[in-house]
Length: 327
Image 1 (cartoon, rainbow, N blue to C red):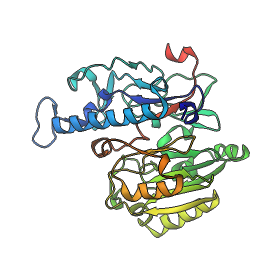
Image 2 (cartoon, one colour):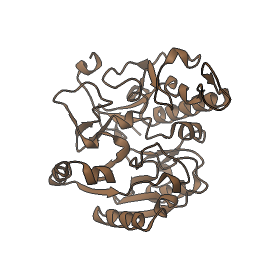
Image 3 (cartoon, rainbow, N blue to C red):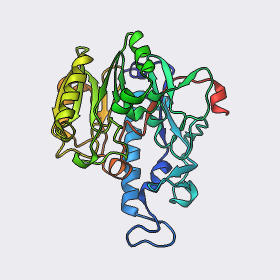
Image 4 (cartoon, rainbow, N blue to C red):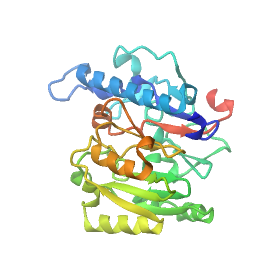
């Protein structure tokens, strides 16, 4: 299939280089048994690099190498929130096919591009903390943190904090454009099978919004999230009904960490982690077996150490003027 049928013409998939994952393998001073300088957990580092390579290979297979931008990392944030020079993390060579992405904040935005922007109805909505260069082409918005937004064509599901606190005018504006907008309840991290971020409002670790082969919308949710409270169940049922989506509850007890953090493409193809049998079964039922593509290895270290999956470390970038690449 031509790669242009999976992403819009002129768009690129953006993902960080492998260096962005290096600090996830670090043990810092003050961690158990560690003092003085940071050290590298070699097993974790190997796992992170293998999983990064598996995601990269899958995306290139789906859309072609020319449509994947590998963002070069020069400064990354560790799990303590500190900025660390890549040169101090691990002996990893700079990838020859990577390039600078100067309009994204280096220590976080390049590493987790999903949190830097969302594209909704053709508009680039940015998280101003992570997208550092702005002109009339992009607009700062509460929808810019993509971890809090599940958009697909005319349907958008957002986190409860956007729904509650974010200028209702933004939601009204999107509805006036003909979009269906609903909310998803907050995540109670103490009741999940897997931790996801420190953000209770990042919804894409326990939910997947999928268009089926007949054009219907479906929300797949982790059972541990659905069962966290009666209010959560009511909120999910109300919101899916309000946007015309079918609700599927998937047992996540034996799934890899954050398996719901997947990506669907324009032709219906879904890219997801290997080894998520219960979730893959539902996705296959919805889109067909020929549209389900999994990584060559199960994702464990990236979601386990970094609390993010395929969706978190990628985003689909519309064409930008040259000024963005030279800022």
